Amino acid sequence: MMDLCLTSVDKFYGENHVLCDINLTIPGGEFVVIVGPSGCGKTTLLRVIAGLEQIDDGTIEMDGVVVNDLPSASRNVAMVFQSYALYPHMTVTENLAFSLELEGLTRVEISDRIDEVFRMLSLAEYGDRKPSELSGGQRQRVALGRALVRKPKLFLFDEPLSNLDAALRMNTRIEIANIHRTLGTSILYVTHDQTEAMTLADRIVVMRRGRIEQVGSPLELYNDPVNQFVAGFLGSPAMNFIDSDLLSVSGAAIVGLRPQHLRLATAGRLKGRILHFERLGSDTHLVLDVGRSAPVIARLVGQQEFGIDAPVTLDFDDDDALWFDAEGRRVGPTT
Image (tube, rainbow, N blue to C red; front, side):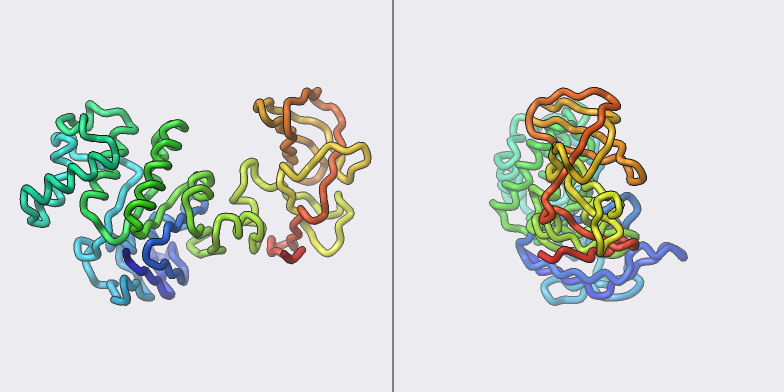
């Protein structure tokens, strides 16, 4: 395990300030997931931690040692990329062995480590195959294995599951969670998928425009976001943001309501017309035109039928609403 501490880290590409005053401490053994829109600096943050990019200001400490000038090979970290980055001319076994041979391990040590990873990821039957003979899910497991076999103190994952279909993503997500429980190694994991973030993370880091917006446990960020950006980033379907005067709410410019907190009512505070609805089996999603705000989504339990353009009235419990000012800052209610 590795304690990681970033203090006032800045990174520029020319005049583009891609990491802005990043302060983040990750205790050894923690699983931290980084989320944010494309271009917010997530991957760059991983790359400066790995030593693939140099920072322009601040410090990166690993186990109390400043590693700003330490080369990537000396940082004892392993990175798994979105692309599998396997050597196409090598078998699975050779792909896993390559970095260990460079480290100077004996054949017995290499064989023992590969056997351990084969058992962990159920790869033994594919040892003699080349990447072109594997499915996408199998290639991703080999990429994971190539990182695991090195036994680093810190794993860095850069959207490792984005090329997999939904079923494979779930299966591989379970494998990664099991690996973390088994090894207890520190993990920094970048993703666009909020399901991965909510289910895997001990803590989530939300980034925007090179800055950290909020850090906390998945439920802390979901239930108590500091601003409208964080509130809208976590949750599926996303939180609705409604002009407060449509709901007769004072003290705020915008009211945030999650789709599951809206319910049908004969005398509710929110009136609209159905633009679209989706039958999802256990739930029904309504998409409503309510006037000046963006379309509102209501998540209703069960199977229900509606007509397009039909009028609908919704209501909600005041305790479920979040208030934001015109700049998107959270102004209440306090939790």
